View 1 (cartoon, rainbow, N blue to C red):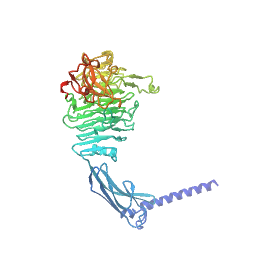
View 2 (view 1 turned 90 degrees about the vertical axis):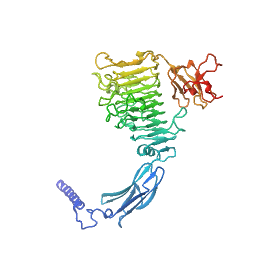
View 3 (view 1 turned 135 degrees about the horizontal axis):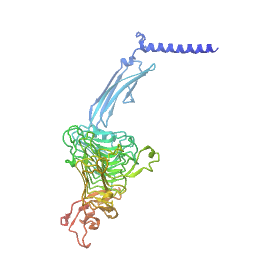
View 4 (view 1 turned 45 degrees about the vertical axis):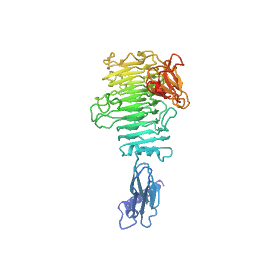
Length: 574
């Protein structure tokens, strides 16, 4: 009985195999005399015609083009599907389109016959041109595509994209701005200010690796007036969680960089770097950014906060690969490092540097936690410490470490001038080696009690300090100062709201009760006890003047709104 059952299964299996071979033979090598044989291409495709056109083929943003199509099919081809860019359509028709970017329109026909799928298609393209100034407001259709098209695709010699009061989700995108003369700015009525946070561009994809949302590679670029929010509100972990907001990395053209500005922005939640500046030495030994062209890249009047990583980056601003950048009038808070430097480029022929001046570094941030797996098992509770806020890496490591870059040559030129540093949980400044040129600490205000509490330098690797080019710490630095405990108040923006006023000894700042953010007003040495605040010139804005011996005595000079140099009072119109 078992043999009969087995034989039955064997015959069924062999029969199935023979049927399969016969069927494949019909598909692959059957007679061509049968017009309906599955071995022949379907006549629906042999005889089908597709025509698709766009008129006009080039439009300016906001204008329309008419896409028309017709598909000719033999009789009996009702099973053929027709789609326009994936949407089912009739065999002929037209529609008006107004694309946000240059777009290809494809008519595709498809059929599944006897289990075999086949398709063919024809396409046309509508090119989109952009006016020199594109405004994106809440009524703009497909605003993200408009932004990418105007900023990246536009071939205009100059292109400005202006953001109204919008929130734009650029998750999944990385924009390469490789043309010159591009601006991404906020509209005046919506721009970041003392009473407005400004438009917002954000992403939510944490696992971006080290890719930047914006890569700036052209010359004469300006980003200003909006918020740039990354995906990591907490402390990032691992190499896949080191996102960058903006990477400035010039193309390998000859000549120096001119006029790249990142200004009046709030940049936060980037676990890698808020703004990183690299150089390029493909065409020149010293690249396109160097210490004799200090203002080529300017990062000014921004608020960098909560850019954090456990053991990797977590920087507000970083100058690496031989770059040089001017960092001025910014506020930093809750970053692992406020300002960081990578010593040199990969070829070893161009060293990095920066001028950091007139910045305010608040008390938060600086937390560093080892990612060593044994410590990670504890949730980092037992291997975390407070690191420093202003940094320059060396180009070598001690024998016991392979990744901290804590000795050797530490950059080229580092100028740290007139900054106010209220962070005391760790060091204020650490230069991890000997600068190729110099490191100067000039006229800063520290909350730290002494120089040794605030500033540290490493030297060459090996035993001893081996510091051959020590930091030039000028005698005009002030230690043990805490200006945030001594605040004035006044309406510095003329809208009836009282702002806090802080005079640190090198700079003046105002904090809005609306945004709760400090904003730079002026570079002045006078502290609050030396000043009086009031509407001195009779308008609605609070002014600053030197304190007189008696309140009834009118000052001889004043700073209008706290933002101008001293002006003689007789310039006021009576």
